[in-house]
Image (tube, rainbow, N blue to C red; front, side):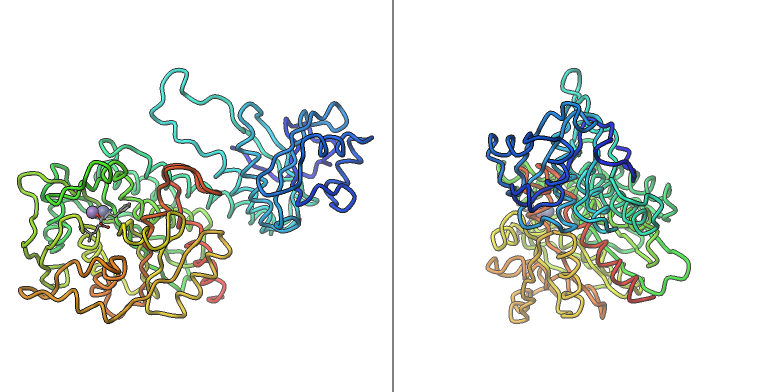
Length: 493
Ligand code: BES
Ligand code: MN
Ligand code: ZN
């Protein structure tokens, strides 16, 4: 979609849709509605509001034929409730305009406030709202139409801050969609080599360096836990290290993603009902790739590293077994308890590698535990960190991005449940607090890094759409990470 800033008057926009937001149905009090009523003349708008029962509650749509009174063919009023007059309303507006534009090809959006933030949110809403995963449709199921161009109506299209807002909104929106595509891709096609290849190709297009290791190099490096998980699969694993390193950056954040392109559970096989969604088990990797791509698109002045450890977890003849002991990259021996707890093993090696990069922060995203979904529901991610300051600023970033997180306790008394009678560690603890014991296991491999683990098992993949999150892969996590990085960039200046 082509999104631009435009100084057209809203009365004279020549698009299919003229769209604006409203928090109430009060034409006299709402400035945008008042201006529209005047432009349309007579009581056309007030009548439509009454006839359609429009109240301005979030997500409610009022579609009117403009009938020559404004130049657009249709007028679309999007209810935004208490977000009226705030930048956040622009995202709802963009989202609903994109969704409503099945046959309409162009739209002009009247922003609730003329700020860089509103421009950014409108762009994010438009790009995210027009997302559909259609790669595998053929014939008549191939989507036609949809929004081709959108103009954001502002008074100065050369304004540098507004232009930067548009760049940021595009960067985040498009990177979120990349993460969605990766998660939605079927696991027979999105194999570990395919995931690595995609990440490296996209990275290099944007000036992000990418190194990909195959099986031999992973083995040689000593990542025996990643190799253990890979044993039951006929597909090779991949280890990817991407880096966005802008000149003059003094801050550096290292992100790590769980890249299980399919998780059957291994010998501790999942029941069919739990296995059906397990192509989503590389969502952490998809988010991690999305973050570094967005950072590069925005040319953020902080260094961002992205590490992805990719494999399948299958039950082939050489599969790893409960009772096996393997050593990690940093030399700890780990007793295998349940082969379905494979994510923490792969991450242990990736974190041990990543901590050597010496970033200011080390943050992983992973679809790690069903227990986290039991605790927080489908729409909220769990944050695990013993670093109060890092947690606080991450939660603030989440506030700005509109994603839902919750801090979980890194309860040290549970650490004893990871003690093994035969090895340094066993890799699962008690099932009660299962998302916490998983996080504690990871924390064994991060050294002295300022570390945070984000469990996205719930919000990274949904059975049905919720708010801005579409059905299927959601790209959840990219937006907040980028806001966090922007905060760091500001504090470095
Ligand atoms: N990939 C799963 C976690 C998961 C479950 C993600 C549902 C998304 C939706 C993970 O590898 C797993 O199987 N975890 C086990 C751990 C247990 C065996 C200790 C779980 O949560 O049951
Ligand atoms: Mn598993
Ligand atoms: Zn898994």
